[in-house]
Length: 459
Length: 168
Image 1: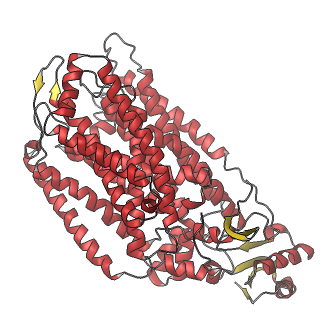
Image 2: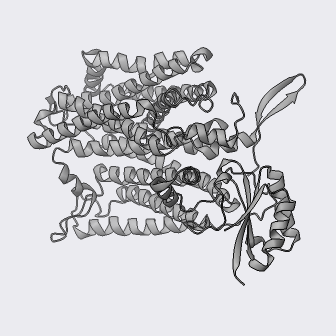
Image 3: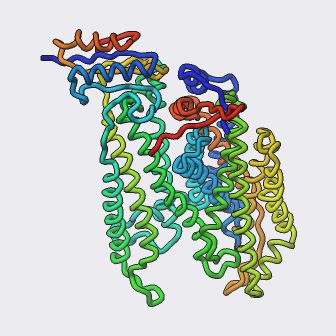
């Protein structure tokens, strides 16, 4: 499965640094547009901080709405980086090479965005500090370690720190290349960031070991993060649809589904915007689609198990909640849309090779998946709260306000703008991975046919 | 005698390997010469000394430090304001495990990255002779040698087919 053609190192440098060493014409317009949305979001957040949460649709009994849904959504997207980078690196999947950097970057910016949402959701954001850090030394009050709201920052903070360091370590050789291709302040900046990288056998050896070791360390963190996010819901008794034992693996596999789909979206954009046809090829989309079929099917299995076991008990409260979630308007419409976009349409399409090899179709199906995955989180968070029964018997509904829609738009613009800003200074595809791939790629003649092949160094 | 750094540049990796062989044959200490590439070649491709490292000790040490700090932090904060909830023990072990796990992993990752930099001998802002064409595909063989032997080493590098030699 190697469709690439042999390129020398000069050509690889030239093509992959076209975004970092030159400014594409469209870049500043894209940044300007996204920057406007980001500024609009900041203004809206200022208004909300000034007026209070009354400007949102949140009201008794639904106090968790679009903000918490979007928080879970971005934590899910962040699982792309480690899924692609760590698992594929550990399994030595050759097709990972052009994908890893962008996936790791998506992890970092998604996590930063996800972390913003509990702050936005708090209404009085300065009080967030009390959840995370010890405070009020005079009275000896401390954060409550029994609360999932303390577990969240611990898990996401660990994942963000680890992912950022992982990204930086893998960037070192490419920073050396940038240092050698620039002058002036850029040369000084890349020189300082590359820490004097030279590319001797010791440094390359450590780079290889680091990739494997950090991958092995990041994987358990990767699993723990969305598990802990799921426990924000799962350890809450008294809310139908939340108090479930399978939430941890269900959330993790859902996160992988949405995260890998987001990588597909991003790869298509990278190929179109920077014209990296030599590096991001239909074979990569084909491989990701095959992976996604497996992941999506596993995720759908969890969805069905979650439904089945909640109905199996025949408890009246649970049945009433599920009846509303699946059969009452508008939730029923959203539920059908979630199933179609999250599973049935994309997975059915991915079964066809022509779709898997079509970058346009892969782009749109990956967008569909993430519409479905946002709806999935929305349908977990909101209907459950809208039908709180034990003790309170408070029923209500919820509709996001303009402020919430504006801040959701802000989140997408913030991630996209940061990706573009990063791409202006650093390569989105690892140069050294592409160069190494060229060394190990060859052709084998078997009988009367010649096939492309990849050699692998024995560990 | 003062040391100087000499760099030989090669188009063909095979010539770089020959230069390394020549330096071995001349009795040079393996710690005094190195091969520089813009691509991670397979280990031993240039007949170079395979570097040993102790990177695996770093995450273990980091994990131990993180685990200890996390236990101290979670236990001390609960004991500082001991509220009995539902007749349960003051120290909530399952909740402590979650934060302990995260801080253990965080510390292990941070120490691993410190270990990677330390074992890679980074940062190193005074690297000796270097050429930017190394990151364009040329293979560099860099030698640290007494000035008295500089000509001899340059001859070895040139004999192996260097397209150019330069001193730092």
